[in-house]
Image (cartoon, rainbow over all chains, first blue to last red; front, side, top):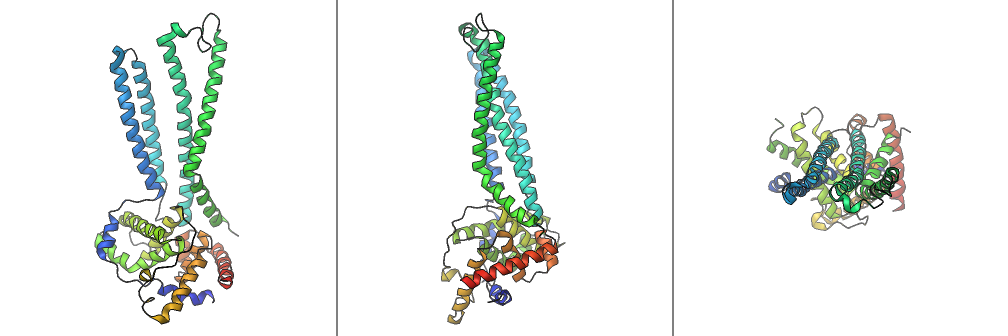
Length: 210
Length: 164
C-alpha cells in the first residue's frame, strides 16, 4: 500500500470518543515527569540535604569543644556558600534547558548545549570538593594535634623537610582528585550519558543537510 | 481569550487525537503511551499562558508534543503489544468490517516505529497533510532538507511495509 493510501486510515486513527472532561482537567494538576523536571526536583532534595546536614555540623562545631574546633564550622560554612552558588548555577541551567514550544531542532540544540554545561559543572564541583576537603582537614589536624603527628611523613619536623611534606601532599591530593574525577565521571555518565547521546543522535540527523 | 482553562480544555479536546497519535508512534507499550500522553498534556498546560495565537494551535501543539516525545527520553521495552479492543478508537472497533482497517493501522504504527525519531515526525506531519512551511515551522529544518528526508523516509517505510 502506498503512503498516500495510509492517509485515510491515519485520519480515522485520530477519531476518538470525547474524553471525560474531568479526567483531562485532573491531568493539569499532575507533576511533570520529564527529565528536566526530575532533575529540578533532585536538585531541590540535594539542596535541602546540604542545608540540613551542613547546618547541623556547623552548629555542632561552633558549640562543641568550647569552640576550639570552630574552624570546621567556618570551613563548612565556606563550602556551604560555594554549594549555594553551585545550586543557583545548576538551577539556572535547568531553567534554560528546554523550550518546548520552540522548533524541535532549536530545542534540541539548546538542551544539548545546556546539558553539557550542567554535566561539566557537576563534574568540576564533585571533583574539587575532595582535594579541598582533604587539604583542609589535613591542615586542621596539624594545627589541633601537631605535637602527636609532627614525626609523620605528612607534616614538617626534624626528619621531614618541607619539600618532602609538600611532595607527599601533592601526590596524595592528585590521587584523591583523579579518583574522585573517575568516580564522578562514571556517575555523571550513568545519570545523563545515554540522554545526551540520544539528543546528539537526533540533532545530528536534523543538522545533516544532505 | 487563550488564558482560561476552559479554552485550553476545549482546544485540547478538539486536538487530542493528534496527541494520541504521537504517543502511538513514539511509544511501544500502553504504559509508556499513557505516561507520554499525560506528560504532553502537562507540558501543554505549562506552556499555554505563552500561547498568543501567532501560529496555529495545531502547530504549537505539535512542537510541544514532539519535543516532549523526542527529548523526554524514557527507557522503553521495544516489544510490540496488541491494542486491547476497548482501547481502540471508537468507530474502529464496533464494526467487523473495520477489523481489517484496525489491523492495518496497527501494522502501520509498528512500521513507523522502525523509523528514526525524526523520520517518524516527518511522516506523521505528512500524513496530517501539513505543508512544508508548517513542517519547517514545527521542526526547524529547511524545506530542501525536509524534502530529501521525506523521500528517504517514505522509501524506507515502503520497504518496511512490503516486508511485513
